[in-house]
Length: 335
Ligand code: UDP
Image (tube, rainbow, N blue to C red; front, top):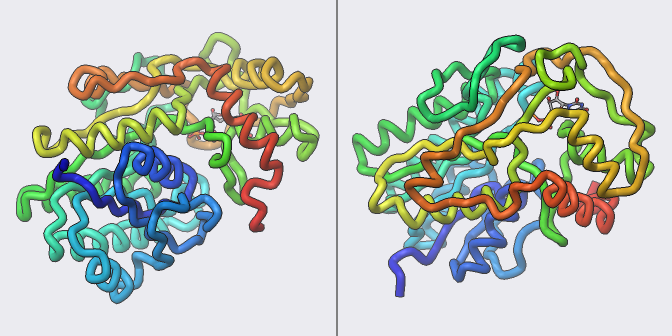
């Protein structure tokens, strides 16, 4: 029997957390999901996971969680506020709450002898001026968070650094680029929706008249922003690989993307091909804070853990997202 069995997933009712839970359970793990359902959906929690509804801000609830579930072998921490734009309007929700919630979790984890921790981190650690030309972003790229959201994740990365030095906690920080795609019965359901692919697919569903392209005067091949779209299942597998390698690795930071960038126009065109819908697009102003190009180098995790994206093709990614949205036009239908 392997030494790793019982995994706590915070935010396991959310988009990436629920799909990672699904993949963990497929891989034979026992999973406990802790989620306050602020953004998550109870329907997204895998039926084989133990679900505990609770808030990381509530230290008594966090303590009770660890007391009720002895012997947690590892934690995957997804639960947090996640919107860049919102963090520019409500910075303390991010700079304080994301941090305090992670501190509450870490305090209880260490007190209960948990030794492995995977953080859901972000490419928003790498802010770049909108018109600067540069190559792919690897782990050596200078950290300069682009928002209070990105800064809050960086704070947590630093907290983990000290928990490693002081308590020996082994950890990996996974900095995702643009997570997208879905499984047949689990996918993106955010309210309000702000991400490009679900918005485009909502147009195809007739729920929006058009999609707005945020700026077409960037120094890119068609003037629209380039992003690195990575399938959520590939992200989930990276979490599991990192967790299983932590005893050997101790501490790692990995950038996670396909290493290929697509423009906003290319995403819309691909969605037209997948859905057969004309998907009208209108050009609007730039969205403040959007860099022209964000593409990951994931060489480190490929080399060290043998991670290989199974869905590198944008069409396949959008098809999987479309399968989810088409069959769940109102998401989990709980709002
Ligand atoms: N975008 C857009 N219209 C929208 C939403 C997004 O043109 O309605 C663009 C956005 O400017 C960015 C890309 O699509 O270049 C991906 O944005 P998203 O919000 O999905 O992810 P982000 O890159 O902000 O993490």
